[in-house]
Image (cartoon, rainbow, N blue to C red; front, side, top):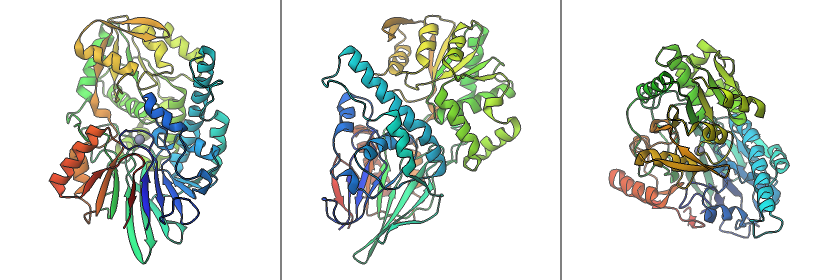
Length: 482
Ligand SMILES: [Zn+2]
């Protein structure tokens, strides 16, 4: 009997990795073996250490990887899988492959930097500390990627085929519909990857890619994400609040600093900003996009116009590529980045990393946090313990505080705001709306990709509202597909 084994994103939101084995054979000698996603564990040390553990089957025995999208928590372990001997095809949509060609080498570079840092400081129990994989190894794995068009059926073995359908999460993101034909049975498995928001034009404006995941699905087994399982997105339009915050800051001579994830979030924010400047809601101050990866991602976005929402398509028709918008500067080099620091006039700086864990945003915040005229706007989730969370929580408590950047305590005197509507994940009412379009009731639904409280709350909600059989997946748990 075929089975699924959850090798990541169970009890946490990172490390997505689900193994399908078409026979009940864990030796890897028989059957066909597919990994749905191959993501990196991130965040707390307890999770990151799992990146160093072996998977239950030798990497060379895995026949293929089906990738849902280019976020590191879904694709960031691929170079390691290849390093350990995997040589099969890695299926992905073309935009996902293009994004991976930027995101994975960058991840390899960071792994090398981390190892070098630990070796210099002597802070690793391993001597020498080694990177999980290098930039070169990440580049090397790109040769195994194979593009698959959306809604094209791909037969991987006599018993297993799959098809991508839109997930509407980020550029190129898709769900994987897997069809298993074994023992005279046909079973349909649907892996959502990360699910975008449902019909979100008004409440989440500026979305660049497709609005809403594919409706009318059929599945015997559903494996669904649950990141926002216990939270609701605000249902108000964020633009008036955003415009007012930016206007007041520039009027008092301050600058606006926006930490943003390089892929999707930065592009979305730039589109909104452009629209608000053109409509006169926001004054025309210089905008600096200071993230080399975000700039590369803008170029990839421009290549894939088939992915745009009608609003994004209209904006690009009207104003052209963001990298050519007057007043918007894209800082490629470190020198260009440093020059932004010398500006004393009001400006808007969008930079990464989104949770202030590293990257060029550190320079901008170290420079501008002590000045009360400035404003920091968070537009993304801030994981507990990150600098982003420390700065954001300080504003919630309304207390004077400081944050450590480059070994120095920087006082937080700037205004801090958070706008929660920019999420690229569906919340429970949106998930229910989507699940209600299913043509059948899945025999079983497994919830993955959520903190335990989020997954269990969503499980209870789905049971109550839909009467479905819903379970929360556990790490390394094996479930039969009967
Ligand atoms: Zn994602």
